[in-house]
Length: 476
Image (tube, rainbow, N blue to C red; front, side, top):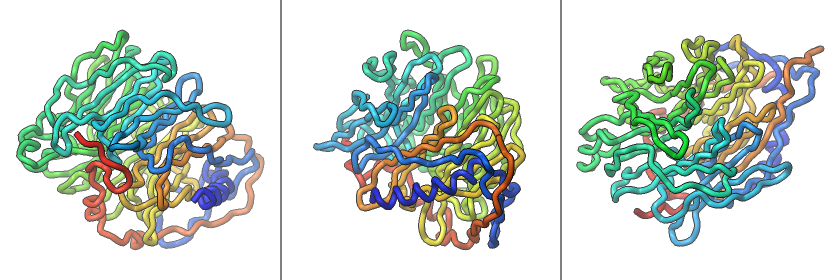
């Protein structure tokens, strides 16, 4: 398995220079032809280098974080003996990983491929971690627990919950962000209004009762919580959220849910201490009766904001990117980033020049692949790069991408007899320095027909139930 991954990464090391450094075609969907793009320019090549992973075989739910002083953290879930799940953390050193104390463990941790724990490196130097803890016997009866560390993960505070409601309903899909007032902000999906449906066995609000809501609060000094604020009273039940600090405040993205079951991506902005709805980012008009378990991703550098998302409107999976130059007050037209058959699970990072790198899972020719592509501010696309093969089912989880200066760090769960978390880094040279172009080369596009299975049926398979196939699900 390791030899195959290294071989793929060696190939990517050659291709990623073009993908990261070369503007490509315009912002149109891929067609059944060859796309011709310029070859790599005469700048130092970007190389995707594998990093040995500190996560044991069978681990899941990778998350990455970067501190203001340039420290890279990887967190993950790792099954242990007797149905115990461990929430683990490691800090990257010059050429290896420093394993830090476990953040949480026990049989009550909720292990899930989509709703996963995270560690956030706040602007004030604090590390904040969250995980999910079972609160009842129901499938989706779990709540959020958090701890903070002032010494880079060596010790942690006592656990607290950001939500005041402790009903045996779903509370999860949390995203952290640096709040404009210096506090640590967080937004999550809150199922308190679905209690009637959950008690009746409907779960996720599909069988009656109230709707899933989007709520937010802050985490200040002394581990004090701010007000529990309702941001949106009706959202998709189990799609991950995203949040980011911008030059003008903060912005969150999530999958909205209309009365007629249109589930497009909505945004809200934190301005003047209050959340203001920003509407739907683009009218994809994806009408689907169930939750697709496929959320958006955000990245920002000052007033430049990148928002990536997935839609399967018209029964075709597509990954899109939209850029904002005014802190998320408005966004440009979406650019399609996939090659003809996306399964979504996107992540995105803004680069210093205002371009963005997007990662997603492509499904083509009856196989799934983790791919990445760079998109320039004017909508031009570089070629897509295959990073690794992954499983097409939910066990592959969501890939993660962060930027640390001019380094991009990528983490994902690779396919194989025993799935394992892999990590790689790409060095992206600063600025331009272009003097000439190499000869053109071509990359075959993939026909939309290669997305063989109906999209809605595929997502019904990719639900958000606890993991059982690759690790032991904790008992309540």
